[in-house]
Amino acid sequence: MKSTLTKICVICQQPFHPVRRTKQRQTVCEQVACRLQRKKNTQQQWCQNNPGYSKGRYHELKSRIQARR
Image (tube, rainbow, N blue to C red; front, side, top):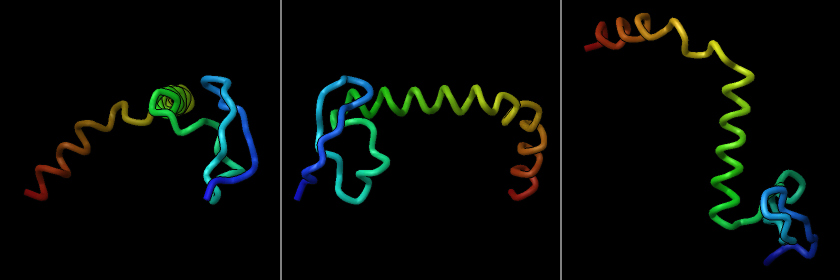
């Protein structure tokens, strides 16, 4: 059963009925293109907020993996 609440998608600007259990947080509609764009946007934002997350750790992680084998 869909919610009676109507929201506007932040990607395509079309009205949609959010999923019942996530209606407070859902900001994009269920269209595949909107979901993919949202994922792309959030991944870019995360990478900008965490620029050094994986830098300089490759050799350390590689040695751990090789030690397990």
